[in-house]
Length: 411
Image 1 (cartoon, rainbow, N blue to C red):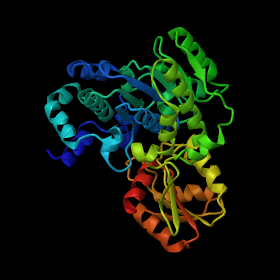
Image 2 (image 1 turned 90 degrees about the vertical axis):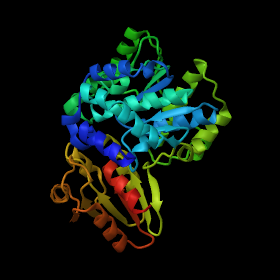
Image 3 (image 1 turned 180 degrees about the vertical axis):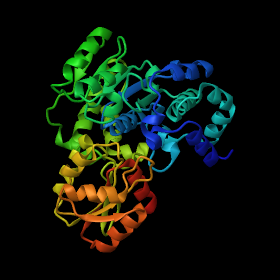
Image 4 (image 1 turned 30 degrees about the horizontal axis):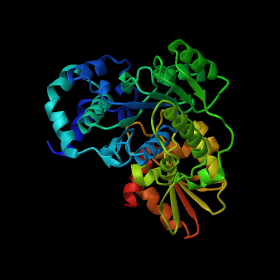
C-alpha cells in the first residue's frame, strides 16, 4: 500500500471518532493494553508528559515541546486531530513521522489489527509510541484524545500530568456536569506523579484534590496572577486564551525543573518565541492570508469559542465570518456568543458529523446572525474574499475541519 492508501485503510478499518462520533469511541484500555503487549510495551520504554483538558491541550503540548526542544531534548509530540496532513499527529523535534514507517507499521501489524479490532485512535497511539521508541526520544509530550481515564493514551506512566481546564464538551461520553467531566480528566493522575491543573474552578477543584491525595501526587494549581509583559509579548501564539495556556506551561516548567529536568531561561525564551516554527503548530488565531487579512482558529465548543468571540468583538475592521460546526457540539450556545455585526457565510465542515449549511443558517437566524448558506466550504471562502475589501477581516472557524480546509485553500 502507498502512504495515502494506508491512511485510508486505517480510517476504513477502524473508524475515527473525528468522522464518526460516538460510534467510533471505544471506552476502556483493554484493546490498548493488548496492542502494547503485542508490540513489546513501547509505552514503558519512553519518557512522557501527559496532557488532558477541555481546551488548550494542543497549544500547551506544542509550547512545552518547543521549550524542551530548545533545551536540547529530542522531543516527541503526539496530538490530535490533524488539520491537513496525518503526520501532524506524530512529530519529533517538529518533523512529522516518516511515511515509510507508517506504511510498514500497518503492513507488519495488519493481522494484529484485524484480531484486536482497535479504534483508529488506538492504532495511531500505538504507532506513535513505537515511533518514539524506535527514534529513542528523550521526552515525549502526549495529548489525550478524549477524556482521560479511559483514553487510549492513559496506559503511560508519565513524569508529569497536566490538566488544562474543564468545560462542557463531549457530554454524551464524559458526563453532563463539570464535576463529572473533571473526574474523567482526573483519571490521568498517577501514583506519585506530580500534576498541574491550569484553572482553579469551584466545581472541579475538590475532584482534583481528592484524586491527587489518593494517588499521593503533588498537586499544583496554576496561579492566576498576571504574567510579565515581556514574556507575553515574546510568545508566538497571540490568541486571548494563550495567556492561560502560558501560565500552565510556565508552572509545568517549574515542576519539571524540580523533578530533575534541566530547562534554562534561554530555552524557555526561545521556545516561546518560536513555538510555531519549532513544532509546526497551526490554527491558533493564525493569520493565513493578507489583503484582506484572513484569520483562523480551531475553537470548536462553547468553552473555546467564547474566547474566540471575545477576540473577534475587539476587532474594529468590518468582519466576514466563514463558520461551520459539528452537530454534536453545543451549536446554539456558540452562535449566541458570536458577534452580531458581521457578514456570515455558513458552511459545513468536511465530516460526517457536520451540521449542514442550511441547518446552520436557519439556526443562526434564530440567534440573531444573518448570512448565506454554502454547502461547499471553498465556495464560502471564495465569496467572502470576493465581498471583503482589503482593509476588512475574514475569520474562518467553528471546526477543526473547516480550518484545515481553509489552510489547504490558501496553501
